Image 1 (spheres, rainbow, N blue to C red):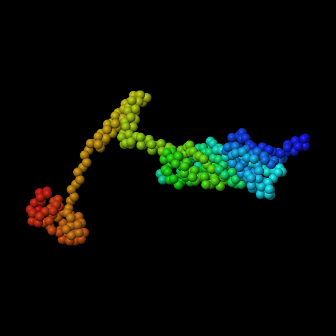
Image 2: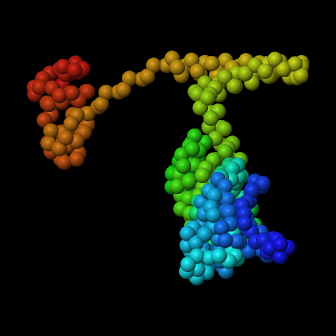
Image 3: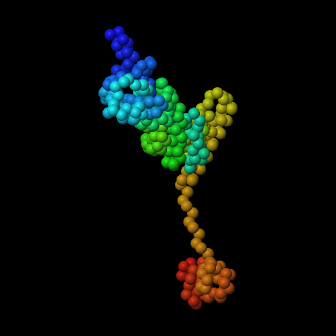
Length: 351
């Protein structure tokens, strides 16, 4: 009986993994030198995938559920072990549990400014930050391409790669969307969706998928932000001419009421301010009240041959040299008159 207990102590009859961490992606089951017995129970919880690896070769993959390990559900391992008619003896195999849950609230940001060509401001540099979430989409590919045979693999192992891919995808999204810098803040959601489509094909090669990508802020250089603030102020003020006059009037009023000058200096400032204010208001009234000068009537006539303008009373056209009918145009205003007319019907001038 003691020998049987000792043999059973060297066998594993239950294989499972309870994830107690927040960032473990892959956990290698600790065999502790033991072997897996025939009919052992394998429990794969939700958001987990179990992978059997025999002598470095990827064998069978188990989705969430409870399994009794036999040749029927270990077809690849059975072929590798050359079990023709089933197996009764214990066997050795590495078992990896891959966490397929979403890893949430991961931070990303641009370590260096992203260059962007803007139609209004030219070449500008942008900085951005936000959060994202991801998960393992293909456990087999993730094992082959990323963690290999590591006993423990955490989010830290892929976070740097994902962040760099995110920044690259965002740069492409901003460039290809051609959204002006002034409108970027109103298009965060559109940029996020565009970046997701551009980034996921790259992460799929690693067996990963990006579940969400959120842009919290895109900041412009300080000088560009100042220019935007000035433009906004100008739009709020409206008529800049009226605003300038108002500002000048306010400045002169303050100068006239300034008690610090005192004496003759204060009086001089007040008189100068009053004179300048009067001149400014007079110019404003003259500018707004002065009627537009009537347009002067066109002097001269038109050549009957080429249509060019000619002086009133000219006998020949200065352009084509054609002889003109001297009695056809008024000698004073150049209006067309009947041949032989003694007075112009337009201006009354004697011909």
